[in-house]
Image: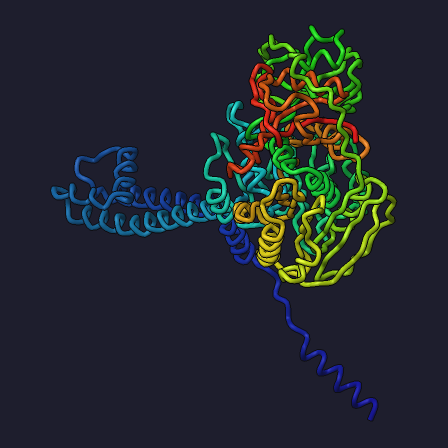
Length: 639
């Protein structure tokens, strides 16, 4: 039985074994032809050209052998005549005086040529369509240099492109290249809709993954002026940013890189990858610091926005050999339309509002000016300080504060930590939230109390919102709701808070966080003092850093609780109310207090609705201000 089974299985296996026929010459020729045809449009055009050549040669030989043409033309003319018949059907109409045999032969050639020409037109049309489709997909290499590359896609890209377009107004042939894993046409349509005025800047979109080395080459990042890496969102955006940094640094040296990191715990890993090339922006900590700093004084958000965007006055670096031996205090009144706010040493470390007797030496001046082109011929100031209107008031705002924090999200713990860093001992903080589980950091100066309640309910808010508060901060529920729904709840809360507080002067500063910049205009209806838009303010900083990476040290000093911060202090601390004073006088009065004045806020203009909150940054030194009670001086000072 076993023997019969083995025999049957052997026979069955032998039956199922296929017979392989050796490839012949025709098979190899067919295989070679198939491979050549698969090479695309150029190969197809070449085969049609060969077919046309063979066709006209065969018919020319046939006409010559049988002597069909009248007049016995030479073979070269017959080849040319056959070519015309194969390409142009109308040529047959000119053969009326020839023999019938010649006419039918040329007619046959013309019919054969029609098939070839039709095939050629189809091949060319298909090739052009494929090329256009490839161009629409954004897969061609960008041949540019000294351009700005943006890797990734988020809502921040619109603000960045808009800001870079303003910054590039003084450049010739400015180019921005966007590489993202999205459809090229969709990206271009969205940019055209959201950023209608590019101020002459050319924006090129390419489809591809920023973490793919091959796709990354499409944007020619090696020859770029700078590279901006956007956080893509999602559950783990930092891993995508770090992988993009790895791809950018794979080939070694290159242009400066600016990237945003969502989780501070990933900063060290990103620094290891980016090394000296990368400037990293801690998104969570930066937004938290801005929220706290702007909540401490009304109108501060307008100051930061003015300094961080390219529309208006911004921060630059300037070297003036004539001021090399001067002190910092003397440079404050040196320029008419330029405000000096600090020094940058040879190591790239910024010192904002250094001591007045600091010698400038070889340091660069950190200045606020409308555009860097204005520094080329910066005019000297002839305005003088009027000692008669300078007040001797030595006011101080170092008192315990009472703050209310409404809402909770991933940035809230950092906000509380920053509030504690700025607060005086004995300060109080009440946290009112409907969602989230507040986990408080270790506090030194604050006493925090957590309350539960519906933050969109007026009754719940009335028990906590009081006129004697120093600051009210409203955060979005960004983890619990989509962007628009979270902002909608924030707007409802703001309306209730503003109605409870009223418009009486001296009330608390109300600061809110908005996720979508389009909701900023809606928040103005609630007469909110300051609105911080998370992605928008980060986008402004990324744009600035992409133009000059040295600004990282300036921003770090500006937002650090241990450095010099922006304050909007009562004008009576500097000059006498009811008088007229030039901005040079205000600068001189601030310098006597060890502070740097960089702007002025008019209480009369604070409700103008133009988004500036009445704040003027870098006014001319000779400009006169009518000093009114409630006005503020924008200064850099130590707390």
